[in-house]
Image 1 (tube, one colour):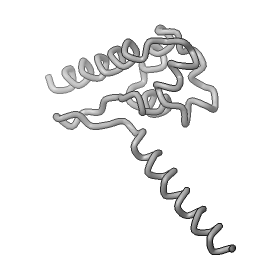
Image 2 (cartoon, rainbow, N blue to C red; image 1 turned 135 degrees about the vertical axis):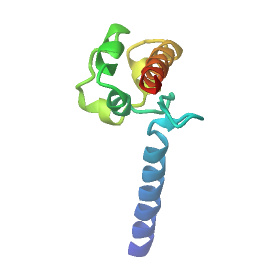
Image 3 (tube, rainbow, N blue to C red; image 1 turned 90 degrees about the vertical axis):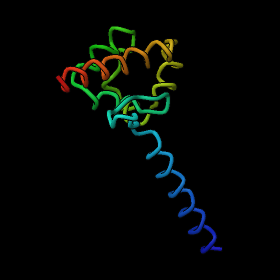
Length: 104
C-alpha cells in the first residue's frame, strides 16, 4: 500500500513540475520573451520592471499578493473581471517595443 502512495506522490510531483514549467514565459520566433494566458503574474512582472505599472493601469492592483506567484494571467483576469486579450496585447506590445529599442 505504501509503495502506491509513494508512486502517486511521484506522479503528482512530475505533473506539477511539468505544469509549472509550461506556465513560464514563452519564447517567440526571434528568441524574445512574450506572455501567454498560462504565464504566471510573477513571470510577467519578471519580464520588465515596468510591468507592474502596466498591469495596475489595466485594473490588476494586487500584484504583491501571494497568489501572484502561481496564478496565471488567465486566472487573474477572471478573478478581477478583466479582458485577458487586452492584457496580453498590452504586455506583449510592451515587450515588442522594448526589444525593438534594444536592437537599435
